[in-house]
Amino acid sequence: MDPQLDVNALIQILRGAAEFVAFAQANRAAGLAYNAAAKAEFLANGLGTQAELDSLARGYGVALIGDVSDQEIDVTAGRLQAAFVGTVPGRVLRLPDARILATAYGKNERLATGDLQLFKRARDLGLAVVFLGSGRSAARASAYVPRSVTIPGSP
Amino acid sequence: MSITTLARDTVHRDLLRDCLAEGLSEGDALLAMVLLHTHAIDLHPGAVAGGNGTPSALPALTQRDAAEVIAALWADLRPSHDAEATTAYWYRQYNIQTPYEVFDDVPDSLKPRLIELRDRLARDPRVAAVVAED
Image (cartoon, rainbow over all chains, first blue to last red; front, side, top):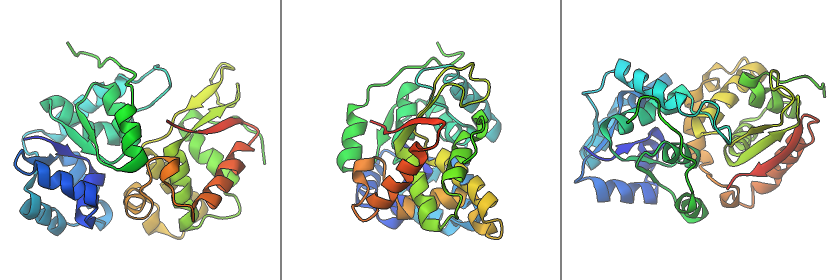
């Protein structure tokens, strides 16, 4: 299943944001997914609903990744966080962002996000990440030159 | 404005608290998120505790990081508004109301207030510069 979606992508597809919907339509056949961390964040405080996730499943085939446990996500997330420790220019990858990236790294799948700063960190990690946006932000994403970091324990 | 050394873990919150001390509206909270998400903050040497006197550069934050900062700040400044004191709330509001990824994408109607907040932050004696990140 490929690609995976960040929570901002779930929100924007539901809102009907053009570039996000176009991406979902174009990639429906490939299989769109989100991980358990994204689900928990989406549903946090009742701000998002299971009915909305169900509508994404019906409309675009967006599915929950069910074969990666929370514990596996946390272990991988910790490795991704560690990659940024002591690096220049001092970017930090905090746990909530690392948990979103963890399954994309673990499965070697693409991740789609509308967060330009998370896009940069994912590129620094060497992940196959897609920036969903338009105009000047999309141009900045296209022009971004990664500052590669090393993930502990990676080959 | 007091000139105190900043703790590394709360540096963004503490800087914003000082420049938003007169109060925090929801609109300003979202603009503060835009500022943290699109700008890097350069600090003077010694501004951060344990920095060994070296300059500190704080890269622009992710949406989640910015939401976490604002949620904590909101809890400090508006403690009676519990529903808005969560990272999830501000992350969602950002994506619904102000989903701007670069300064140039901010609408002209919002830029004057954003620039005012940026300039106020830049006047903090611990801050060397607030720079739109490429």
